[in-house]
Structures are given as structure tokens and as C-alpha cells.
Image 1: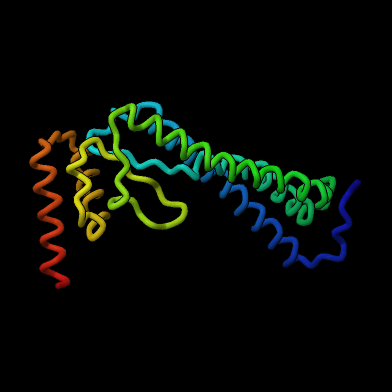
Image 2: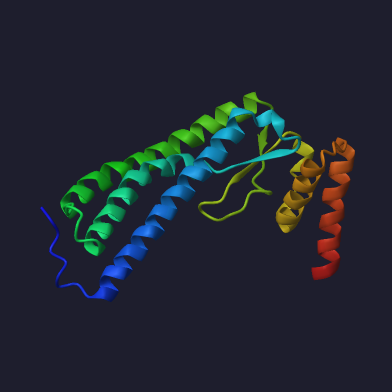
Length: 191
């Protein structure tokens, strides 16, 4: 069945195509972030100080089929040569996928709570960001999770990244001193 798009304006067809491309880009970003998270979990010891794990990235893979179906529906509206996909099929697929996202997010959280401590990492809530879809920070030394790390968590992680990028392997005391220096600088600026 060919879609009857004769009633749609050129602008509406173009908008449907743009939305479809945005959805395809979202699919690519979800798969890419899941791949990065998977690689990080596959060899967590390769990171010297910490790992940044995004649990939602793995669970969000269940959204990709729904986003692809929605993209196809929008493409069908913009390109009359495509057979039209019924919106009912999308809705029937969306609910199970959303339930799988929630169940997977829970399962990934349980898995991380067992897997990463077995690899020598400790979850640090003070370094983790509070946004709903941000990553969780796991560190390999409890001393790196300073009580006031939340004040400068971005600066600490940037410093960690610099050390990893240069191949430097500072001692535990050097890392702790750098964290305390960043906290002291923050307090001098804002208090």
C-alpha cells in the first residue's frame, strides 16, 4: 500500500524527513554510547583511576527498534514511494520495548553492583553527576571519593582524564593531594 501524501505540503514532507534523520541520528548515538559503555566494562582495569559507566546506555538499546520504526513512518510521510507502516504496529512494539528498557536498566544496575567491585572498583556518588542519564563514576581507590568531591567533580574528572591521556601514573598520595587542592581552590573562590 502506497502512502497518500498528496494532502501534505512540501514543508510538512520536508519536516517529516528532517525528523526522520534526527531519529536515525538518535539511534546512532544510542548504539555508539552503548558500545563505549560495553568496551569500558569489558576491560575496566585499563583505566588507571576511574571508569565512567552509563547504565542507561545499555538499556536504551531497546529503544532503537521503536525509533527506527518511527523514522520509517516519518520517511513514509515524506517519500510517497515507500509503503506506509501502520502506526498501530509502532504502538504495539513500543510498549514491550519501553518495559524492556526499564527492566534492563534495573538489571544493568544490579550487574554493575556485582561486577565492578569484583574488578576492584568502588562506586563514588560524590563524583557522579546527578543528571538522570549521566554516567556513574567508579574509582579504584576509596581515597579518591573525598567527602567534598561533589564540589569539584567535573574538575577532578578532567584532571583524571588528563593523567590518563598523558599516560601518567600518579601515586595515590598525588591523586589525593590534587583532589584536596581542587577543593581548596573552589572554597577560596566561592566562600
